[in-house]
Amino acid sequence: MTTTDSLQLTEHEILALLAFNDGESTALTREIFRLTPQAANEQLTKAGMTTLLVRGLAEMNEDDLVLKGPTEFLAAVMATAAEWLEVALLTPDRNHVMFAVASAGGVFVANANGNGTHGFTPLKNDSPVLKFGLDAAAHYLRGSGPESVESGPDVRRPVAAQIKHHGLGVQPKTANLMVDQSGTWQLATGEGDQLVKREVDESVALELFEKALDLDNGTIGSE
Image (cartoon, rainbow, N blue to C red):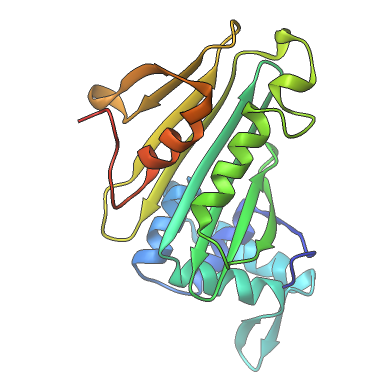
């Protein structure tokens, strides 16, 4: 796949891709995509393999189904991934949910379309995958595009970006950065009983957001 390719896959096709390899990375990828409850459903997986075959995304090699082109790349990344992002970008009139999956062999982002399908797009893997999530957050929060709070009236606020950063063998980190209707920036770190909220200055908000999501340094201001 190149950086210009994009591929729409159904959830049962994603299940089929995950079924080609078994391991810790595959299991965590399935969990992040919220597909674990369907993993044991052989009929869904078979349906996914059939549609991949019909769409020309797989082929038969004697008695074996073999992935082709973009699906081969996606399956390899999911099977060897070491880092994941769950990203939710929220405005009063739109929710945008996506997942970024990174391995030594490549990186892709999957946009949830809200109809049981995901749009898969490969990314350049010459920078940390967390930077992708932070750039997407900045796009919404600080006026770098049409979905930003500065490109329209304040009715678009509150606007928020929530990221959950996963890695193999470490506890995930979750943080939420929000701009409320008054323009105040608020950072929430942790989850459940560990959730901590505080106001932050706009000039350092994204830097604090990044530090809160760093899997090595941990969550600042919450411990």
